Structure formats: structure tokens, C-alpha cells
Image: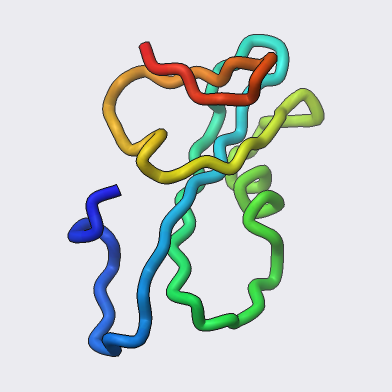
Length: 93
């Protein structure tokens, strides 16, 4: 992910990192939701895990949905995305 696209902080000690959680259909590999997370390393606890939040925001994902954590770079493009259900990796195109 382009670091210039990340939220900026006036505190130079805070270094943002980003990742994405992809919720997908385990049978077809169709991507149902992509949840981006930006962390500033503050150590502040969140009320729910990133995975739980991604599933909740995916809405009707249901029990047949899988979830993988990937680098934001893997999903930060306009190409069609699918998940290889065997390897759990992102496929483009």
C-alpha cells in the first residue's frame, strides 16, 4: 500500500501499518467483504477482534464464509479478486 495513502499523524513516533481481512465464500472463492485495518501501534485494545469485525461488517456472510488476513497491497487494486479456496490466497482476474 502506498504509504502516502495511509492516515497521517503529527506524532513522528507513530508508524502506521495496514492489513486487510478478506471474507469469502469457502465453496466458490467469491469475495464477500474486504475489511482494511490501519494500526498505529498504540497498543489500545479493541472491543472485538479484526476477524470478528470483518465478519460482522460482511453482513450475510454466514457460516460458509472463510476469512484470510493479507497485506493491504494484495487487495488494494481495481482488478477483480477471488480467493483460491485450496491455498487461501488472493487471485486476480
